[in-house]
Image (cartoon, rainbow, N blue to C red; front, side, top):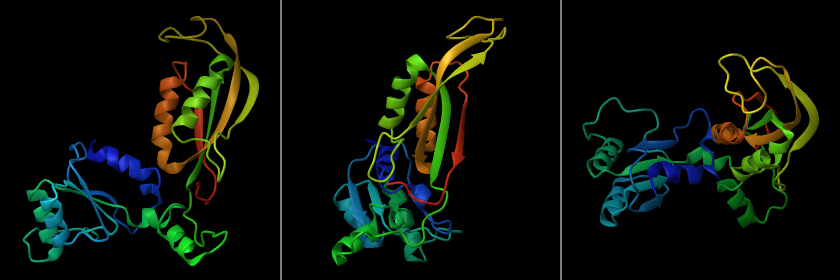
Length: 237
């Protein structure tokens, strides 16, 4: 497993998209394609933590707080931050920070605090804005089930305690393949009418790229008609 793949797993419950604008999260030190030999989890990436990672042969540190916050203008070892970064680089250790992304997650720090305190029906007091998006696309009726299931499989259609949520409207689409087209349905120069499903599905903004990648891969048309809009300021579970 690579550093990037670990980051993708972390993103499933604490999307970096949820982090506050002032924060510095994600991969701070190291290369994303590096194979992971071991992971050390910590609250802060101190010098002692890097030493422990070296001893335990862990080449990835997942830290709650970011060791690099305001940026570094030099690396001379005069501060503990500089020394940590220099030592991590020297020993080829990657550092990944999660901070407010985990704070703002339904599965994060504040949820655990609520559990310990016995709080019933907790709600987010200051929701992170613009975290829900809506995908609308048009797919041949015969291919709608495969596309819908593929989008569900990568995280689309989750609303609170429900999954596999979508809205489907039957209609008829028209198009005419032109000279340079490579139509999978229809013929060049002839206007074609196809029974289609208008598929509407919600998704977390953090997985938009993943959803669109699957959309383009599974959708049978050469040119995929779609739109993505932002809905509201409620965080999807």
